[in-house]
Length: 193
Image (tube, rainbow, N blue to C red):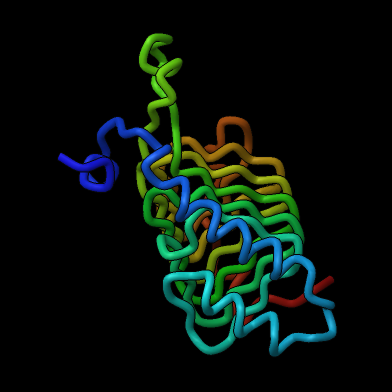
């Protein structure tokens, strides 16, 4: 079994097998992060080359880093503020209307607890899925294998270690559901104070 097949099967694999791909993506991210902010079209064109799939409208502020790029897909109307990090050894999928605050991370990669395996440099990758209409607060970290449902707000500073269902506000370390989102908080009833 190849290292790519092991990675896809969520088994331990040797990440050194992907060193060339990793360097190629990091070079593209470096280039992206050094394009002037005013050169929006150039940034958008390069990001389309970095990521596996994009829709028409998206904006990702610099700096941005990912491991492979081709394992990340973003939906329509995607916005990520500064310092987004996506360790996309496994698949990372974002739905439509996803807003990500600064300093957030999505980490599909993990390492064995067993010291002998970990010291060999082995790792695993579990996919992350984020649904539609999700707002993720600043400094949030999403761990391997997590699914965040539709219409969710994740509070700032959260460490998301388990799946989050649809239509809730969740936050904390570890992140947990605090309450459902009510009809009063959705249009046409919602009004700013």
